[in-house]
Length: 104
Image (cartoon, rainbow, N blue to C red; front, side):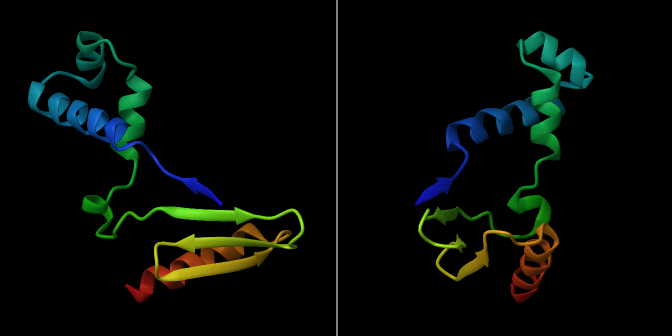
């Protein structure tokens, strides 16, 4: 099973930079130059959805691919398991995720 996750230390680092930039009074570019970090990295983490922005809990998602199985299995936390054929339509997974989100 492959687990998709972002390092907590990386999240903490960028969260600290976002807070530092907001508190600095500098432009984003000025703050990034002073700190020696990339503007695009700060922009990415500013735009990245988080639990506090969306009101949704951020959960680890595991995707299990088996060469012998014609299905893709997506495990969302301990609440949901979604099985899709390998040739699924991307719009279908978006619709499925919206339904799951509406369940709270």
